[in-house]
Every structure is written in C-alpha cells, then in structure tokens.
Image (cartoon, rainbow, N blue to C red; front, side):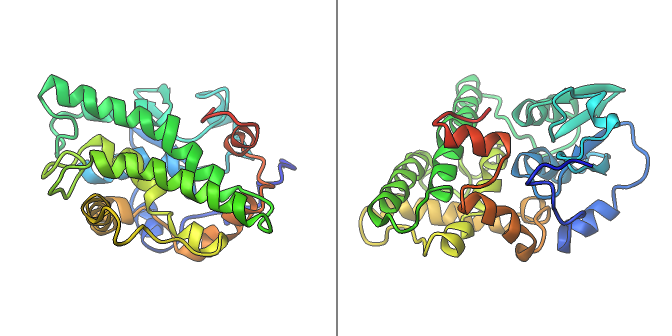
Length: 268
C-alpha cells in the first residue's frame, strides 16, 4: 500500500454521487477510471451524466495506483477514459472527445459557430492557467496569522473570478447564454467548492454593491451550476471533503497540483 500522505481517503462516493456510481457498475465498453473526490474527474463525469452516455464507473485511489490504471495511463492519474480498449486522459481532452465521439447524445456542448467554439477553448484553457492556480493559492495560503498576505491571496482570487464574471453572458444563465457549453462543465467543479474558503479561510463573500451588474452575472451563473443535476449530482456529501481540503488549507497536501502551486507553478 502507498505511504503517500494524501492517500487516506474515504473509499467511495456518498450521497447523490454514490447513487450514480451504483447505477454505473455494469460492464460497458466505455470505462471511466475515477476518484470520487477529484474535481478534474467531475468534468467528464458530469458530461457523461448530462449526455446520458453509457459508461462503467471504476473507482480508484490514485495514491494506490492499480495496475489496471497504470496500464492505460503510466502517470496513474484520474480521470482516465478507456474507449474501445484504448486510453485517453487529460480532463479537457476527454470532455472534447465525448462531445465529438457521441454526437447523437445531447445536448450539444460546443456551438456550431467557429468563433464561439474557439472562445470556448480559450476559456477552458483559462480555467487551468488562471483560475485553478489562483483558487489553490488562496486555499493553500499560510500562515493564517499573516492577515495582509491572506487578504492579498483573496483579492488576487477575486480579481481572477472577476475576469470570468465580466465574460459571462449578460443575461445567462450559462457562459454563452441560454445554451450550456463545455466551459460551464470545465469550471463548475471548483465553483461548486467555493465553500472551502468560508470553511477554512475565515469567510468568503462576493463583492456586493460595487460593480453589481458584473457580480450579479456570476451569482446567477453559480445558481445555475448548483441547480444542474448532472453537475451537482456527482458531488458527494460535503463533510467527506473536509479532511482532503484541510490538508490543502494547511498547505501540507502533497498532490502534484499542491506541490506545483506551492512552488509558484501552474497546473501540472
């Protein structure tokens, strides 16, 4: 067994996510190697649910990498997709693959307009290059006694969040407007975890009176994400995440992402 300090995890999903897992245990050609707790997994997992694509859910602890996973993905990371006995990994790549490989399974998550398709890809990339690093820098900030440093980490995160809020469709509810898209699914897992800042970092609220129209877009979008069954349904009970994110909040987590953020790098 692995001695990795982050390996002590609740072994299975709970709540609504467990119901979904139990419904996807039968043998299927399309297999999703997953970790119930992982936001990167929840990108393609929620798309599979949204599109009602038949798949088999396979739970693995990525810190106890089974050979079945390593034979598909030498890095042993989740999500890994097995399609026609061939491997695919990198969550954004899997998301686009599902959109292209299953055109008869709606809704369509990339627009026909070539400009809007390119815009979606820009903001999918933005999530990895800007949003996730800022999210983690805020969560991993220590020491908590450094109030000015903590406030700067929060302010920096809000500035990145405002970049997104400014770009959201003016009436929503989704990034592009009335039609949900890959951008919504790619960013959603971290937005649905904004509670971590209130729980671990002393409170977190969106700015109120200033630039109300911009922040109102974000609030409307968050509400839409929280109400989408395919997104919220793959989340386990909140208390199961506490021990995981406690390690990040204490800046002791040893995941590849935590170490990259700690050293000033981006998503590995």
